[in-house]
Image (cartoon, rainbow, N blue to C red; front, side, top):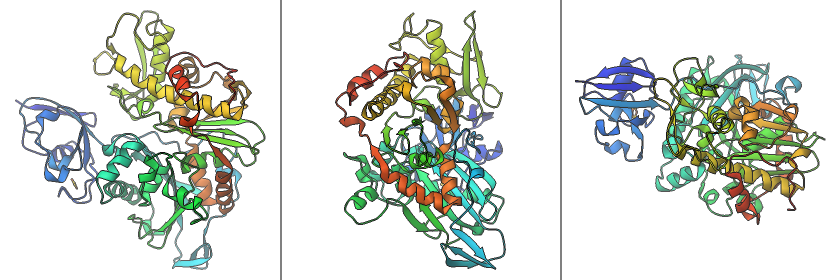
Length: 547
Ligand code: FES
């Protein structure tokens, strides 16, 4: 008798007794660790998707975890029959957008003017000497997302992109959205979230093909919660109405001139030069964070005459509308459904994720799977395509109900990836929040969707989703396709600009001060917009509402 263990898409038959970490090593799976299975570093996280009851009880070292998360070095297979499915938090290779597309402010278009400079062997940050070295000098731009983390490593003297890395944010063990993380942080003092992330970041930096000590600056963008957790700020106030970060409150009190944050490499817990500068870009307001600010920089809003919209669909969808004359922004608490969270067979856009679905005339499903192998789950772009196809073929109505009664739709011949009506409900809620955000921002601006001249879809999901399908289910407005730019990770592009150019960094600081923040929940019709947005039908193109 043995247990069938599916670990990071690899299969083996295992006898009880050994830890999941041991089995991972046998399978050649790299589990993040800094303590070599001592139960101290808390990095060896695994998410157990199936078969938790076949595993050993939780150990004291795991008391910070619940739900599906375990420490693999503290979890043994305790049964001699059954099926266990689990994966590490660094599974597969995530799709990294090393280049954004269609943005006016590209790295090629700027004159590099980094804060880190060298004269002879003296290396300075903003003119202040921090080291002496004749080797290359490097910097990192980081987009710290709720779900994923993306890093870019640059040679600061040549502006050359040296390497990139990305991984799932391991803080997911504390919940999928920012409110859950804030709650977790309040219950578990001791900066557990910060430490776990720092461990993963350190491994990523050590894997770069350069000496980490040659990294003298790091620019961090992320939503207000992710950024402030990274910089050890209290996030309590972001979780309470009126949802303002501690830096925003201090700035309003005249105690700081900017919401940007700075600390040294030494204090960052990362293996970069101890006198390096880690700079957290300014947040806009509330949950509209430094990632949205970076998107604005990359989209060139400071110089833009056209009316543009930027939509970064994610756990917290960011919306920005405007041009150089006026800019409005909002954050929509959409939740993780469109990133594969809270969906029975949902997963991020990793190898094995279904990213596109077509239903043939005979009713069979045709799937595009990232990496080309057998499907393991379905990611956001696959969910949009599936919903659109189910509607097109009349199997799903606009209220999100299957026409022939609730059932489970099996997508692959093996029957391992399926879609439930409860998944539709999750997607409806997420879509409702996004739609309501769009309606409120456009209403406040006093324009209809048809007046937008460029509609940037930012983020990995926006880059890869089928625009027609997204418009059919009402996730985005029905804007002519030639006005839609699937830009990809505009936030990392903006972070890179701020790393390589001091003038762009100043532009970023000035831009965030000009943004009018729309607090969605204060709009009198927000709830109506939300309810309407939960329906799966195209949005009205010329919808125009008095604010
Ligand atoms: S390997 Fe460090 S806690 Fe498990």
